[in-house]
Image 1 (cartoon, rainbow, N blue to C red):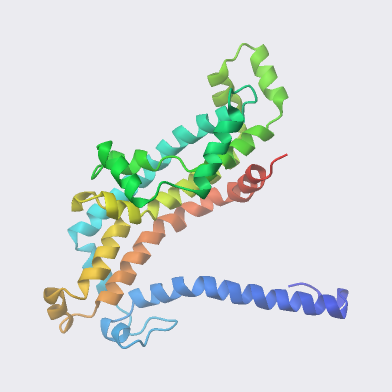
Image 2 (cartoon, rainbow, N blue to C red):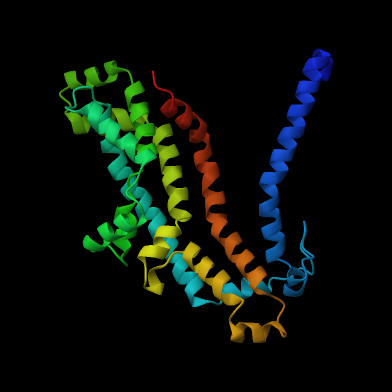
Length: 293
């Protein structure tokens, strides 16, 4: 905590207000996680009665036992891992060479191509044209459609391009003098230097893929291909109206609310586990990729 004796009266008020605002922001950020976690460990009766506020009421693991016994939970969980891992790899395979090309001053039409990439950040074709485009390409209801169709994001491309532009040209000149071509310059010089930016972009892609919901819901029809987020939506939308499930509530200790909360907790655990390993690169990658000389 800051030593307030070193500050003037105005500075003290400023520091105290900042601390209060940070505390309010922290609580408002953490509370949804705490509430969902508490709800998932509470009994269905307490959840339906709205008794859960901060801590679990009538603690039980029945909601987790229920979802872990569901086949579709594991299928959708596996699909989410598949889309996230291969989708992130696919995105990096497109983004790294693309950003390198756009960062090269000798690229013909470089200004135009950069403008076109930035244009996609402000405008897009819209829902129906994109859906028709995916249909005509034969990418509906397929794993490849989800992986390839959303491989490149304009923001990530520009972030990585800015980092490449910040690499001193002397590195490339030294590699050229040793006889390196463009591919060797990219993979042996730029990629090792761009680890923070690549890790940051990989984290963006990973989180985006993991939380991917809308387009997966629109493009996928086969239940065995849906990711966890779509399964969660399906559970929330149908569980309360499921008469068979409703009939079991009288003899069980879980409810639609606690089951949905348990699925949400399971869906965020992998991201929470992965983030600390990438976090050390995150701030540096954003700073160096977001600032253009």
